[in-house]
Length: 303
Ligand code: 13P
Ligand code: SF4
Image 1: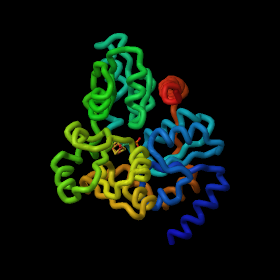
Image 2: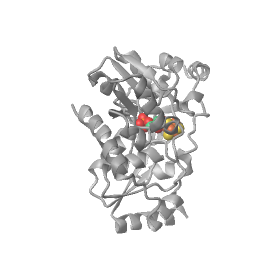
Image 3: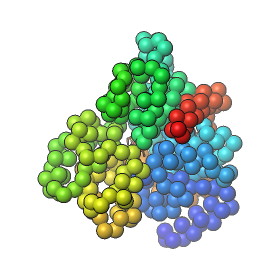
């Protein structure tokens, strides 16, 4: 049955002139069918540069919304409309506006895990792979960082500036606690500990390496080590195992599963292409402001 579905997806993808972008946390069956598999930065760049008419985004809402902001003339589809990112919803444009009033003139760096409205209120966006670079390049020694206090804290340890952190966090990465990592280290003493910067500070502190999801995939591919403890959403381990058959990967905890990333399936991808749903669009005024914030990130990222 999956073969039949895959056949139909491939057929419809050609007919619609579509590209399938898939995040590293998506179910394996979707990773296997991806035109591009990657982290938030990789996929936003692929969306921006795509020549196709349709972008099907297998990820969560803010990712498809970012693609739509960058490519307003293309049709951007999110196969499961309820796939949100709870952390992105922890800050609203109105609350951010209120905070900005308390810190006049202080630039706002927003994580890409935000709504278009929040991006429209921010100066520059960042992803987990370039947050340090973006923060360093800002011409101010004070920065408002939204919404992830854990990523913000990590960046603050790498950049000599004052950070005003929003009280947001990823409800999945906070399940990766120090106790679990120490237990995994005990069980696999030869393994390197690789974590995502959305993890809590005490976990980041005991990690060997801190990277974005694609950064992790590149790292384990290049590394001479053969065992790794992975401190992020467990879906990434599918890709790591597939690309590195001789190496072993252990999740820091089985509790790090993002239910929103797992709502997607081959069937939903097929329905998305059949019915051209669900279209993600952003009103012009918000889109134009949000695009400035994302373009500012690309500009800094490219130097
Ligand atoms: P990456 O950009 O590192 O893939 O992170 C996205 C994300 O949502 C992590 O939880
Ligand atoms: Fe959002 Fe966390 Fe899921 Fe990433 S893992 S999409 S930050 S809830």
